[in-house]
Image (cartoon, rainbow, N blue to C red; front, side, top):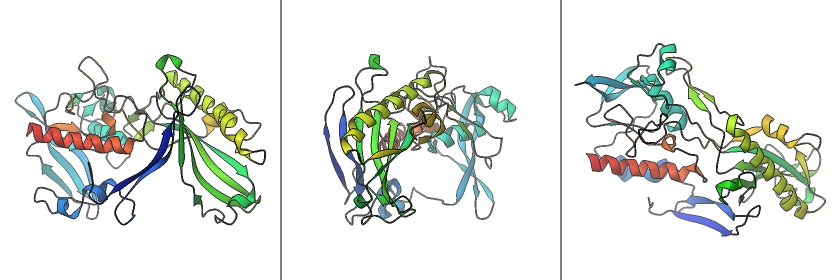
Length: 362
């Protein structure tokens, strides 16, 4: 997936051992040859690609459903229905070969359910005709769960470098990953991620403030689900993240271990002039983690790839949706488990692989 004129800027070193840094690095940022940040769109939808005769991009278009028809006893995806957001006019587009959904781990299962593919009971509740009953659609929702921390320090550190809020001074983000002691039976793979995020000078209290986060980077146990709000594509789906529920209580143990490591290995080395602002000293960390659980929107798992024996499986190893011909999914929803990494590169890799599979099967 090389992009001409782009280069990566990584920095880091490996350390290893339980409860000690597994890896320390600055977050990798990708720039073009003019030092501008590039996105998936700017990297792949370059002028030469947009000029291809077999590609048409229609912005301001909202997909309403996948069209599923009965053909010779099979369910077949034959196209989509979408609405022009500017005019309100609806159109049906026919697929000559296949329909590929790539809406992400929240909106792909939602679109499948709106199209009659999903848990039968939920579709019946919303009066949506059931084309293919698939229990796993919308289930197995996973995410990198995090908790924010704020640290105060001497004013002179940032007073002349950053403006007061809301103009924040972004730091050179440094990431540290650790292996916790909360689940040693699963090996030494890192499951705690800590990183500095932003910094600012606070004129009210004449202090420097640093924003950090502790995150469950791997072995995520909390699992939730995505559901229909109604039978209309105008009503966005509801997300039940399931944080700390069931086996997910282990995520709270990992975050608590991360907070302990932060105090013992970070804060203690910064000097007595640095102190924790949030959580407050009289607030147990578990209460803070429950009240202020956050997310980096690394959603995954809601159209799980699995074999036929798994009742929650939605797609096969070639990304075909079970029980429907001509329909594939190509986004993070197909991942059976939340990866121990930022999901951006993996999402691109899934798209790249989907394109290869499509060509192979053409």
